[in-house]
Amino acid sequence: MTHPIPTQEASSFKALRSYKAFMRFWFARLAGTTANQMLMVALGWHMYELTHSAWDLGLVGLFQFVPALILFLPAGHWIDRLRRSYIFTACLTVQALVAALLYMGTVGVGATEPWVTRELILLISVILGSVRSFQSATQQAISPTLVPAHILSRAIAFTSGGNQLAVIGGPAIGGLLYALDPSVVYCVCFTLFAFGMVLGLTIKDATPIPSKEPTTLKTITAGIRFIWNNKIVLGATSLDLFAVLLGGATALLPIYAKDILNAGPVELGILRASPAFGALIMTILLTRWPIERFAGKRMLGAVALFGIATALFGVSHSLWLSILALMVTGVADSISVVIRMTLVQLETPNEMRGRVSAVNGIFIGASNQLGEFESGASAALLGPIASVVVGGVGSVLIALIWRYQFKGLFARDRLAP
Image 1 (cartoon, rainbow, N blue to C red):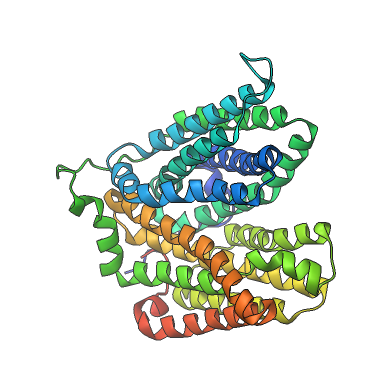
Image 2: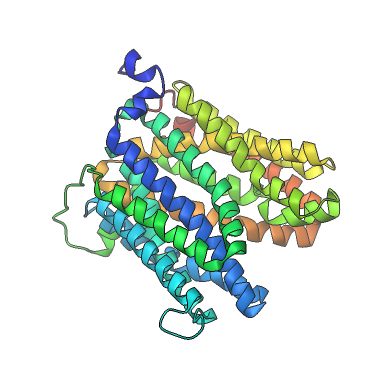
């Protein structure tokens, strides 16, 4: 039996503003994500200035991904045993200390010259990757404890919009500040992390009921078993994994900009930002007009649209058509993400959300990282245009296959039961 959405709460964005704890969490997350995006840009530039090595640039990403992969199961376990707002705040605190360390190393505190080295940046990359394994899953698990179920999709859309703002603005601001002075960007990152940390201390989320079970391999891997046994959650998470794995074209954008569209670095930046702009526009619309009916059909339809737009980008030789196609991929991805995240959180009991969110987070990370590898490998074999087109068609086929393999997901009507 479904419950009607209260007209007063569902009427506008005011439905979210009335939940002060959620808004504090939103601003804390926005500050932390913006600072993290700035920090990633600065670390990359700093490493390249020190070593002039593309290999070392790759190591920065690898040294972040491997700890996140190793720690995602233990992270989910502890997220379900401790107050999540405390874990979120602790993650911001560690990143604030990292930014402070980089600031001191850049200005040469305690020495006659700067003492940031290649080895220090790689060590910091390991720390940031470890923190990410806790923070990403914690952020996913907090929202359902701060707002009621009937406006959760609106809250997730609003949160996704803030994340897109950070993804668009963070790297641009970080690059600009680094050009002025590397110490400035690290100082601003510390300020933003500290601001998020202070806000995090004011959040009172619903603490999971501590389990009396001993910490064993069975309890740590409970999130994997839960996803495998819940076909709605399994279908939603695996759909995103395979669709992004096949349909991602981000890694090939430099080739498209230079060799196919005859464009330069400015146009490349626009191409890279286009999916985020499309996603931002859609999340704003979903915040105002949330998805209330035909959730499963719309999710699968969004994945199919993502594949079609990717294939269109693959065959385009027009800069503006390529930008438009990438914006449509962002729109489709935003719809899919909001539905998937809402379904996963609503289908998962509060005491399991940390472990399930950790598994979901590693699925997202794997799809992005492996998707870039798949794009590069297939482009080397087939050429960039064929690689992108085949990937887009593959995403459409995945949506069709999932329509029949996960009939419960396809038939799902309302997000909140």
